[in-house]
Image (cartoon, rainbow, N blue to C red):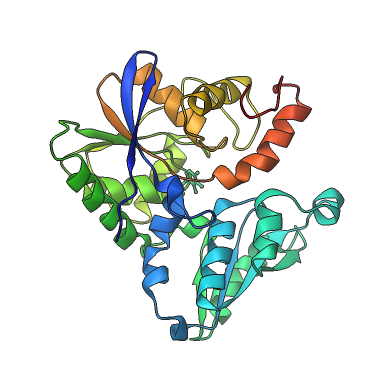
Length: 293
Ligand SMILES: *Cc1c(COP(=O)(O)O)cnc(C)c1O
């Protein structure tokens, strides 16, 4: 396999390296590619369909849609009820996933939790069930492969720290386990550190080299923040586009709370920016939308 490359970025006078997992594939990239690695290696005859659930603009949803298209599996995806605008004018990851063949099913909000809980009990042997965000133990193998790439590529670089933002924490946790000689920095982008630790502990013991940086301000997931947009723009001008949901909080925490040389693992998700940028524009945070301003 070809390794994803490393790019250099200088930010506030510090040099960072970025592991460009965003370049792996237009849809199946970033940490979703790593987390779905085992499924990607699974023979297409093993299953004939895949079931998952979660948010309607989720990066995991889009990655699963791309995976199922490659495998020839049907993809059934459950969400809560869509708003009328979302339904009438599909945008972003949702529109892309539909184009890739996703069969979307809406569940009444009142029954959603119960329905999802019962879903997994009714899968047959030809159906693959994937939890929200791909938070499963099977993600471990792909992150082990990522760790090996990092070990190879940073052999003579004298870097002993990597960083990647957390939702479920699956990526950061398994990366830290596979890279015991590195510090692995992460920060919670959904909920707080306590919640993140809880999510991680459901998968494995948290190793000592995993360092959770507490955000200096409380952010709500997927809400537009001016400082998030600002850091996104700065990084964009430096030549790398990052996602607007996770990356800004990670970069902020790294700049505020660390000082060593770090390899930032790009976690992908750039495809979701179209719909996020539209929301930033609505809020008036985007002065000039043109890409090279
Ligand atoms: C899903 C996602 C994450 C969070 O990954 P976890 O393994 O759930 O912690 C981070 N960044 C991006 C861009 C993502 O799409």
